[in-house]
Length: 75
Image 1 (cartoon, rainbow, N blue to C red):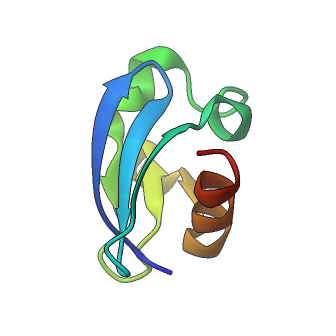
Image 2 (cartoon, rainbow, N blue to C red):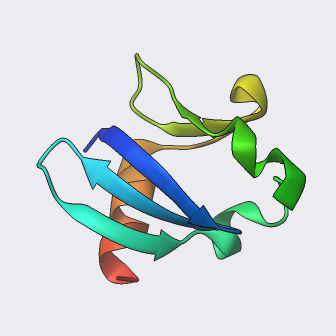
């Protein structure tokens, strides 16, 4: 399930919109905190080919299937 859009809310909290049009607010700190420092959160973007949420120009990413399952489980 590819990520279509996102909105950064605060710290590691994002509103995520997936290709099935589901929108979920999720705290991604447990997935990101060890790899992306708070100052690098602003580097978030969607990889156009894979539909994953990536940071630091692709140095860190969350695979779409993992992101979708995490977001749906933790909403």
